[in-house]
Length: 207
Ligand SMILES: [Fe+2]
Ligand SMILES: [Fe+2]
Image 1 (tube, rainbow, N blue to C red):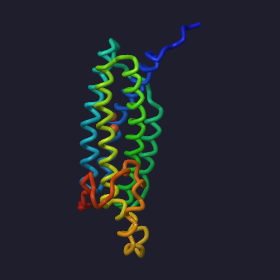
Image 2: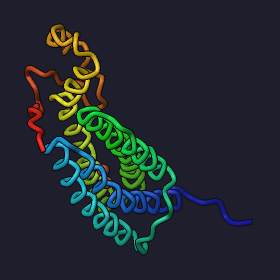
Image 3: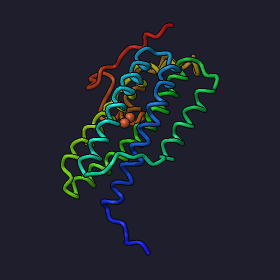
Image 4: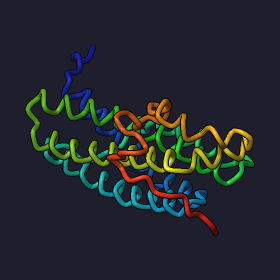
């Protein structure tokens, strides 16, 4: 009978899982970018692709900081999220609706990563792996910022454009209802359209 694993073993397991998830995402993000109509959305995915490559490098530094060889272990969770994203891209939606769906798919991935990195940071700190904790925190911050950027794009026009196409008669009331829906997108808390902490880019798409 093998000895019981410790939190350190679980930490390495989670690192391998996350390392693999990031590698899968470097293949998925270009597809999301290509499917996007809004130039801002496309560039958000492209920017995050670059950041994701940086996450892989930082994770390699994390492995090294605890004297482990960087190694991945297939991440079923992100594979499922990517699979769902692919099936959405196969649908025949209007452009704004497709953009709204791509954001939804992207935010599922970001939230999965935020959960993973939140745990990894806490475990690393708990075990006194300060260098690892700091690197992981840097990644977590970029995942959160991306999630917020996607919320801002959705709420800065894409959702409304999609909603207007779905319900053309209901346009007139939309301004009054903005405030009530603050939590409708995952990172929307604490932000309203008027006094936005995050800029609300206009949808200028045409291609
Ligand atoms: Fe990442
Ligand atoms: Fe990410």
